[in-house]
Amino acid sequence: MKRNLSLPIFAILAAVAVAAIVLPARPARAEVGIGLFVGQPTGLDVKLDLQRRTALDIVVGWKDFDDDGRDGYAHVTFLVNLGNARGRSVVVPFRVGIGGAVWDRGGDFGDDVNLAVRAPFEVGLRFRRTPLEIYGELALVLVLLDEHGNEDNVDADGGVGLRVYF
Image (cartoon, rainbow, N blue to C red; front, side, top):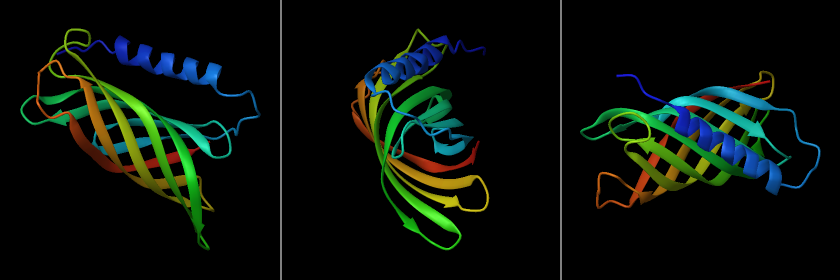
């Protein structure tokens, strides 16, 4: 079954454009992290540092639902670093965020689109000598639009990920 991913890509580009307009113009950090997030959802993860303590986290992939199997999924989250614990070989960042998610439960994007607001809590292990970060995330999800009409409006997602920084 071929899926059209134009809607989540459009949503991601729109979120990035809004962030670029709303955020003040200051020198940004040049770090970009690319990796894989495994759990609910599973997908390609891109973290774009905006300023010293803020970043955009974008995941495009799929989410497993109870009876529908794997369905297309994307989210964009604005992350704020609350602080870091420091060890000899690692930095442990604590982050919270707010963002939006879009997914399709069964079919091509556009015929059954669902929307949610998500608020994740993330803890990472950022290695000092290598440009790697292992992180875990737990997110509270508030479903705004569910085309299947499920009664569950509040859910939790989570998983682990690995990012390589450039």
